[in-house]
Image (cartoon, rainbow, N blue to C red; front, side, top):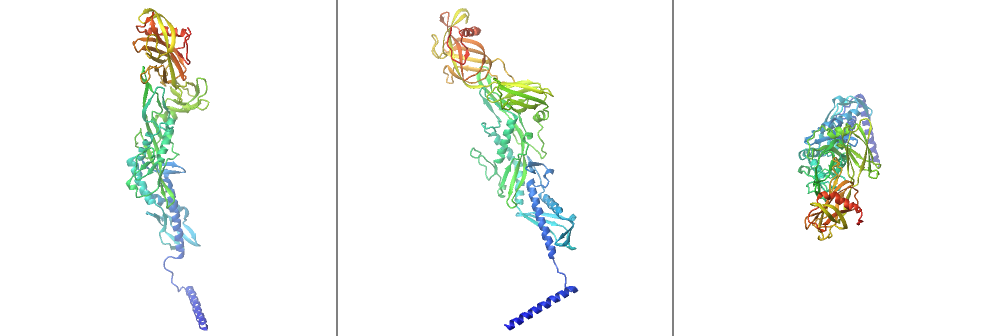
Length: 622
């Protein structure tokens, strides 16, 4: 135990002597300087390198949000949220972007905003020669490296270079994908193709249907779409297209059960990146859209005056330009890299746009927006003077909007003489020529007549006798004997022998709307059977001249004819009373009644207090 204590005392004495000797030597300058990097230098270098990493991360976040640029306003860019996203591809054009140069500028700008020429680090004076700064950017598979050289000194001693910052990211893969994808979009025009496909397959029963080509069949049917209707549908279909575009290995056939558009490409498989697409709501589609015609008004017309079959065809050409924001996820940086591409359709075909994005200066914009200097007020009512809301109005090619609940609409129009058109589903359209005056409120009062569909028409025969022959088919007088359904037997004639042909000719036609069509009725059904009750697909309130003839199917004689002027107010049931002349001067009729007898025969029927066109069933009263 005593021996151990003595050894410890001896070791302690040696250590004390050594420390004293070192202190004395240092005071006399006998110790050499320490070679290599001092602790102070290391601390400064680590601090600046950390600052470089922060600068690199800040720069990456900015260029990820702005499409690879620090200042995307200097290039073609698209508003998206709080940022402007640079355009990488526009139709056949692909941008060449210097990403490394942008990162270099961002890192150096960040460092210059923080570092000064002379600073104090840990109590030591440090100087930076910022005007001699140089930066090398390396985009690697696992991240981005920035090597920054800034001649630096601590207490006059040079600090070893460079300062190195590093941020983990998948920027290399993202850039490779983005460049390949932009080039492929330019080559294949994928978004133009699927946009046209969406338009073509849009549902006619939906409010977002965009008609391209087809026919409207049926008297009284219409297809009316103004510019606002088309614009609303186009925007909805574009959003649908963009939201349903996905990156995929294969592209299966598009069916009702497969609502997605698959973007394929063998080179893209190796990236294994999460990619999404977005339509920017900030985009002003109204300034980048037009159609030909500007408004679509399709009113089927009879193929001839005597055949009640109405048909009209249409073809619409659309031109539209819109951006798509492409977003690629960087799970390492926890950020989305965004860039924009421009999609353009020119008259239903892929367009040929450039990076110079200019708004369409079509006739509509020039006339209906830039030169709408006159004020117009429209008041729309029905025939009972009740206001009609949601009625669409247009002037020339200009869409004016819809009436409010009070039936009123105020809009600006060009100060030129042209046609005004007002329409609403279920009503006959209104059309007129107006000459608006500058500096005053131009007022137009509009009455819309309600159309009626699927009317039950009941046709009766008014059995008559002719007396006192004057000429061939012409007689001095006629006598009413009775009324029965037209398909019954009359005199010696067989049952189901009478075939009626009824033609309603409108007295006043509106050549702007062209909806005042002729109405035709016959009592032969689709099977060729003679009946008394038929369906009239469509009718509308108006003043008509009715011309009718009744032919015997057995003798082929005209046994009745008349013309009659009336104001038709269509209801669900209409009763029509036509002459059937069975005898002439007490003998069976042997010659056709002359068409010159139309007025005389009609007056004879009316003298018996029988309304030729009525809304109730009638009896003989004479």
